[in-house]
Each structure stands twice: as C-alpha cells, then as structure tokens.
Amino acid sequence: MLSDRQIVLYKFFVTGKMAMAAEQPRIFILGASFAALTAARELRRRAPKAVITLVAPKAEFVYLPSMIWIPAGIRKGSDLIVPLAHFLKKYALEFIATKVTGLRDGGRTVVTERGAFANDGLVVATGGRFLKGMPGIEHALTLCEGVSAAESIAQRLRDMPGGHVAFGFGGNPKEPSAMRGGPMFELLFGVDTMLRQQGRRDRFHLSFFNAAAEPGKRLGAKAVQSLLAEMGRRNIDTHLGEKILSFTDKAVIREGGELPADLILFMPGLTGPIWAADAGVPLSDGGFFPADEFCAVKGMDKVFVAGDAGSYPGPDWLPKQAHMADLQARAAAENLLLAMAGKPAKAKPRPELICIVDAVNTGMLVYRDAKRSMMLPSLRIFHWAKRYFETHYLREFR
Image 1 (spheres, rainbow, N blue to C red):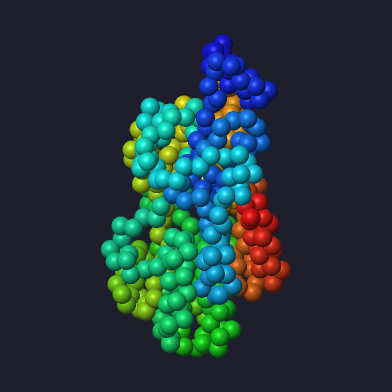
Image 2: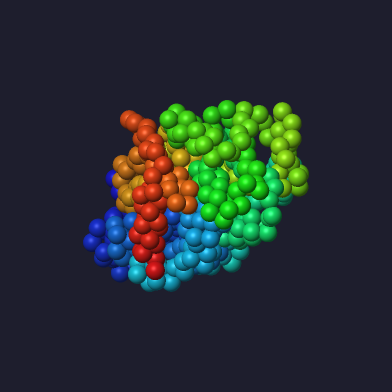
C-alpha cells in the first residue's frame, strides 16, 4: 500500500498537479557532465513539473572526448567549455554553484561548502577522480584532468625540439574496469600524426608503456591486435607486461628497468569522488558508490548513481566512458521516479562500448556489446564522424 506521501508524488509526476497542502518534491542531481546532464534532461521529460536542481562547482560543461585535439591544434580549450545557462533555462533547472562534501540522512541531505540541502530523490553523477598515489606522479601530465592539462601538453610539445615522449595508462587494482585507456591511444596516435605533419617526427622517440601484456583488452581481442599493429606501423616502441613503479622528471621506472622520457603523458586509474567517504554508505573496494543492476545505490533509498562515480554489475569490459554514462543516467532517472512513486525499478542500462580511436586525420571504430565485438580499420571517415558527433552532442547546450 502506498503512503500518503507516495500518493502525492505519484499524482504529481503523472498529472503535473500537486495537492495544495503538499510540498513540491525536490530532485537533486550532483554533477554537470555527461551523466548529470542526461539525467536532468530525462527527468524533465518524464516529470515536467518536478523541481530539479543541479549542484556543481561551475555552471559549465567540459566536453572531454575532444581533449585529444587540443595538443594537435584542432581545438582550443575555449571550444570545449560550454556555459550551461541556455540548458538550465531550456529545461527549467535550478543550479547551486558549490562543491559537494558529503551526504546525510541516507541521502536525503546533500552537504556542500555552501550548506546542507534537503531532497526527495537524488542522482549522484559527479564523476570519479584519478588515483594519484604513485611516487613521482607529479612528473606526469594527465590529459583528461581538464582543459588546463591538455593545454599544458600542447605547450610542452610545442616547446620541445625533440626527445623522448612516453605514453601510458594505469588502472585501479581493486576495480579492474576503472580505467580510461582509449584517450591515451588517441593522444599517442594524434601526437604521432601531428609531428609528421609538422616535419618533426624524426626528432622524437615515442613509446607506449602499460603494466598489462594486452593493453586495451576491454575493447576486444581484435582491438588489441589492431592497436599494437598500428603502433608498429608508426614506429612507436611498446613496453608491456611490467609493473609501473614510479616516475621521475626523466624516466618511467618499471620493474624491468627505466624508460627514458623527457615528457610523460599518463592516465592513472579511477576511483570515486573524494567526498564519497562522507556519504554514509559502504563503498565498493575501488572506492565507488556501489550500484545494483538498476543503478540504485546499495544501502540507500531513492539514491541512484550514473557515470564514473559508480561501481556497477556487468561484464569485466564495462566501460567508464561518456556513452555508458548516458545510458546509466537514463536508467537512473526513470528508476528514481518509479521509486519516488512507490513502484519497483525496471530500467536496466545495457552494457555497450562504442568509440572512435582518433588519430587527428583518421580513426578506428570500436564496438562491443554482450553479443559481439568488432573493430573497423583506420579510415578518414571515422575522424569526421567523431567531429560530427561532437557538433551534434553540443548543439543541445549551445
């Protein structure tokens, strides 16, 4: 039997009408990136009259997939930072500019640097953070840390007359799927292409390092073969299957010895947001919000998670990428409204990986789902498809 509160919420979401004595339900979304914005759009579509509030440090969306083009000069940082004023107005969203510091009352209270805010339903979509515990990590630049990091990489490459550049990525030993290797393959191939276009490639020694013997295995066996073959074709040295111990200003220190590097470009593994430790719920071994198959946070009521902040059931190749975050956000939004109406969850995000491994002027298409895995060869059309998708995706926010 539904409680009086659940009946009020159900009538509100279905009819858009609220009993005069009842408060309007408030839904909070934490974050302002792919998962958060998709959740906001889906919630507004399904609940036209709901009060929906986004909480993030800034009312702007940073389009991370195109960071790979900043070092190559195809994009500037300002091209990829999109103010959200238009989006907030279009979908009638409230916005609180602050950082989240924790949750209380089983998720019913969001604690921030600007105070505490009550809610009737919550979507956690703040993203994760990079593991920075490796000794000497300050000597490496990490592309996906944001625009300033990508611009620093571009500047360093412009200033270098030549030398050794080492590319690699790591993982989270307690959560194998918590890695982001795709952008590093793209950065590697993109820098190689850029240097060739500039007539400087012969002055640089490019190398790729990874603790795994088969880097990129989550993309599928054919993808690993294709990626390594592409490195060989481009005369990029590979150093695989040995644990990474530390970094210095001149080398990557591996179990098998030192890899010379005048510039280290490294993507560490991911863990959950730093404030998750103060959320009042046991986290996954890797430090993420533990989710069930419906993206509900285990141990909490009417709290859902989408994107890199969560740990989800599924195949070992389940990606932490924008496309998967969007799928999780749609399921989380639908299931949150069902939960607020006293109904069981039903939406499950399908495991799906799709990406274009870009190389500035060509690209390789990778696709994987529960039934198949494929990788199409490097073609110019895939580079332009990636550009088109950027334009199409960002049109919603501009």
